[in-house]
Image (cartoon, rainbow, N blue to C red; front, side, top):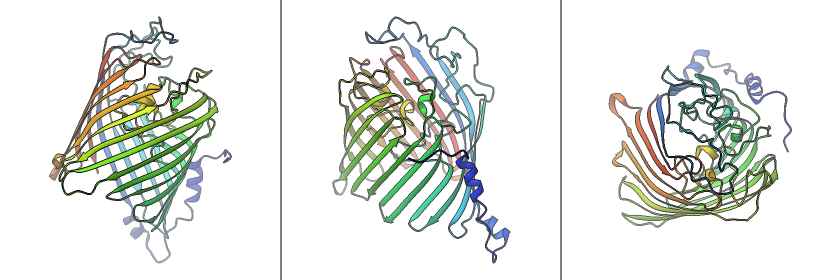
Length: 448
């Protein structure tokens, strides 16, 4: 087990920058010209409209009979983005830093309600805290790392993004998940990749700093763990080409659980319509700070890729096996998963997870099916993703269904880099959220 250090990874990264000097035969101006600046600007409007009450709380739940879910229609507007600087390579070494920012631009309602008991620290009934918390501004040095690169290896140390199945950026709002970590990716052959990560600290999307915690520390999470943790270690291997997909990952969530994730896929080579099938398996065990974890989840996805660039249509299925083990802590039981970086954000890799819901966020054993499509009727300029899904998790939580429509238009010409996107979700009988609610996210982004 890697020991904790009193000096942060960021400080270590900055200290290591000293060897990254300009070669004696190069001028400073040439080195500076090799640097690169990129980023994006975002304007998001995130609204939720609730209907009905939480009458679907199952019998025996600790919330039964408690009037704590008196939801109001909520909204949040934010303007923000990131600016990233990357230096030129010098003997394979480079450095990068990215400032992330989000501002409410005076359009959010911070009315305080001391009687709102939904979550102890979220007493703002009209403010949607998922976009940028209850902050009026967020400014953070989200990326600050030293990198070494050669033709087969990329290694980073410092503040950075990570994107693998269960440790991901979850970049759906203003600022992504960010990690203080040491990472390495090896690509010995085309399509074959090995990755290892050691996460020391984590910064979720709605706060300003890195801490020794995970997503369970958020006050609106269903599992609230307020202690500290020692991060995560993971190692994975993946292979992908035009016909095959395979990946295997091992995760050690320090103090919580160990997870194995396997996935495979195959496309039948045909001329026009291309059938494909993907399968996945998750096994997670542990007996730590949140109690006993013992989960096994299976999944399959069958579909057809359409001719040209039209996209695909598919049907998916997942089952979280019931182990009939009740947690003494009331946090994880009956075979559900613990996902410390994706749970309430619904960005896990299960095939039936959608924008607002899934078996992981349901925190219950059961099964789910989904019918969906990813369509590009005008090439890559327009993306249309409709889905219909059902989640059968009774008696632990109420059976739920969801309808999603995600439309994104990517402009070109003088407006190249600008994307206009709307993500609409209509959920029925989501446990604890009322008989129905509509979630709409209008998103404008300019990437440069």
